[in-house]
Amino acid sequence: MKPFCTIGLFIISLFTLPVYAQDSADKVHKLSINGYVKSLQALTFNKDFSDFLSANLIHNRINLKWKPSVTVTAAAEFRNRLFWGEEVKNTPGFTAMLRNPNEVLDLSKVWIDNKGLVLHTSIERLWAEYRQQKWNVRIGRQRINWGIATNWNPNDIFNTYNFLDFDYEERAGSDAVKIQYSFTDFSHIELASNLSVEKNKRVVAAKYFLNRSGYDMQALAGLYHDKLTLGTGWAGSIGNAGFKGEAQLFFNGKDSGISFSGVMEADYVFEKGWYINGAVLYSSQGMTRPVSGWTKFEFSPSPEKLMPAMWNVGFTGAKEITPLFSARLSTVFSPKVNLLILLPSLSYSLTEDLGADLVWQSFFGEADTGFRGISHRAFLRMKWSF
Amino acid sequence: MKRYVPCGVILLLITGVIPGVSQDAASIVKKADEKMRGNTLQAEMTIRTIRPAWNREMQCKTWMKGAAFAMILIQTPAKDRGIVFLKRKREVWNWVPVLERSIKLPPSMMSQSWMGTDFTNDDLVKESSVVEDYTHSITGDTVIDSRPCYVIQMIPKPEAGVVWNKVIVCIDKKDFLELHSRFYDDDGKLVSTMNGYDVKMMDGRLIPTRFEMIPADKKGQKTEMIYRSVKYNKPIADNFFTVEKMKTLS
Image (cartoon, rainbow over the protein chains, first blue to last red):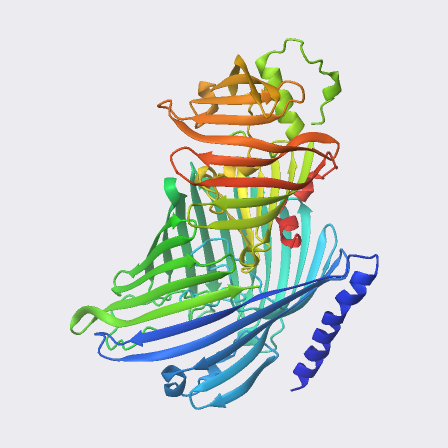
């Protein structure tokens, strides 16, 4: 409970500040509040649609940002989720899975944990930043986003995300300190460390960024879970097409050797709202053979292994049918393992602040009986932003 | 236009222009362009996308410097609040506050619709040169809203890579206001029309403060751009137009 008391006070102080700010001539005390409420209904089907599980989620996020001066910014972001349905009921240890493993401090609270009903709050971001012309330092729970490519991010060594978790737009953060120094308008160095005391969770790294000849380029080096790691990434263009990539090497010590994860991708925007993106991801630790006995497709990605398979080819095609209505189809195919993921989705804007999405996830794989469906999930989401 | 949205940038001493004196077409276009753009421009705008069955409105803030630098911050609607577009010469980045990261956009995105409007990305952050990329000729006179105007034909230079085959612009003879423009494709077909309305004094300049972009082949469809406030020639350092600055705007 203790962190909640402190955080409660922090919030109260945040809410009282704009009153002073409005009365005073000093307009720098700027507090902004935004967020959303989402309703997500999900159905998970088995391989041949003979059985399904339902899951329901009301998902609320409240983001507070406070700028007491031009040099200081503080942020607190809260994620409240109310889960119910068969999936909650049938998943042992459901609440334990809600915790972000990157976090050192537990700033989450389970308010209700009945059979089939869970209410969970977590403080997703809680940081303060000091910014000068050349320097900035950010301390606290934050997202250190070192990815530069679109689909997969081997360079994102602080807080890897699961690309299937489309409802978690902000993605997980980590408890860390980050210092940035700018050499020029378009070159800087970032030094970052998470606050983990456990060696096998610690990440300490530096990233150098440079923009030259139309390319954003970066190089990084550090320790990831007690292993030396080196990486590089770029984002530029060839002709009118976007061209991006990331590569990350991990030195696992004498016994395990070196592992490598790399992605290369291109994207293009065509006439009349068409967008395509193609990507290839290689993870040396990935599987190279079909897996027997798939029942569900679940995995915990890490920068070393962003997908279960060694080779993965991704393709996305999207079309803005009208400015209010768009369709998207993403596919991922892993050769050798023969895993295929189909991710079609439709988005519709009902009003300026209310949107609806229909999202489908189908998984197919090679099994004893040949190539067949593993599982399928359907989601209907409404989102109101404020 | 689409190369000719008056949203960008040098203070011109209009008082030095004596009405009635014959002017060449290129210098008229140049004066109108410079009047609307200034050396630097900061503006707050409302953009309304109008369709037969629905309307959408967004508010944004823009900063521009010369032809090379532009920044646009979306202020409303709530779901897009804090999104920033940065253009430096030919490169464009998009800051997505939800993801806390900047995304480098492919050059092919520039010719496409910006945020679902009838404006392209190019229109809003153009390093357009309506002066250098075209040859200009005065083809006649007209009157728009009781204002006598020059009718000027602009033909793109072959090397300019302009998407239009021809642009007709009507520019007010006295105050050099661009009040009407038509954009034609390679087949000589009208693609879109732009009108300027609500001429007002903004930051010491008389300018149209509302523009309509009307696609020719889509009935009941248009996008309106309204300048709520404009500031000309306030110094903006080049290092304002950086990915780092983009992060701090919202």
